[in-house]
Image (cartoon, rainbow, N blue to C red; front, side):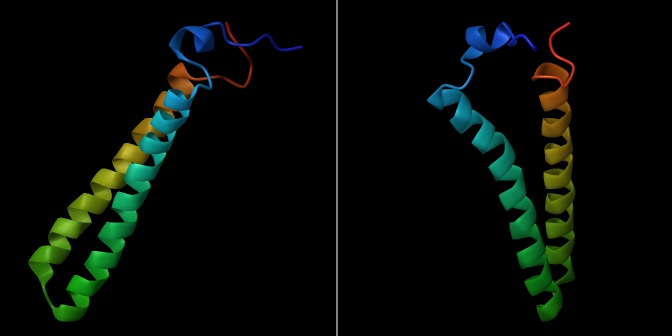
Length: 84
């Protein structure tokens, strides 16, 4: 049987604050990506290429934030093989 991660009790584990922090970490970049796609499509349809370029950069930033949060989750979060 797998033992629980002892650090989860120290940092809050599944408290309301930790759940809200996890939601913030995943929801904000996802919403940024959605907004960049939506406003980028609107900018292209209006022919505003400068705005499209800004939305493209915002989309790249959102994807990099999602990748960084995913890396943090598996670097400092619970691992599949349990605590070392």
